[in-house]
Image 1: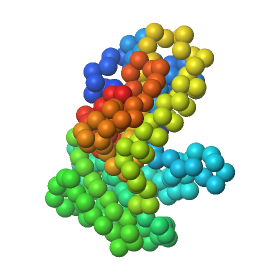
Image 2: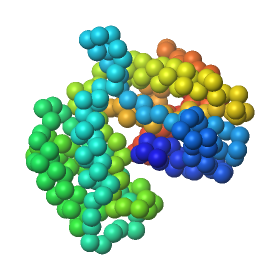
Image 3: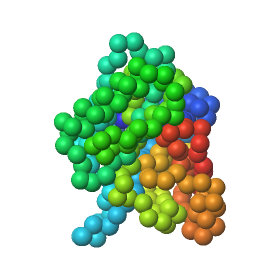
Length: 236
């Protein structure tokens, strides 16, 4: 189970869903089964761009090694006295991406300073290398002092609603195609999209999305979830 799937599992738990089973049929859809009847697929909702060949790709593709390294550092960060709850770490970066040795040193120092300090959240810090972090209290023990919560790219952005609609339409279409031959296996299908774009849409943005753009889909429910607060979500 990857970090996005884990967040989706926590989200379903917070919704009060009973009997959540991960990959009930193996490495094929759905990602989760709720109460033996509701199939749930999960996906990152990331900002998309059209590359020089006309292919739609995630803006963060070139930064996957950075994500993997920071995730490994944060999730496995060793502390002398583990706190009773896990702290989520969200990071923001720009280009050029700093050398890993420098970034690793500064991020480790920032996490150490936080865990040895007041642990007051939300906590924000800007590192000399250009990375900025936001730390929040997950209010539950996830098995480590810190857990990566997401990232954003300073070079991404643009029109919030337009980018969100494009990302939603692509994500929904991709999951509809992936689940099409499995739909008859279960009575109901949900899609959980964990939002990793730059800006979390406020009420005004959501109203624009629903009134001016809209996203058509064939799922029974589609949830868009804020990774920094799993109780903050909206349905399409």
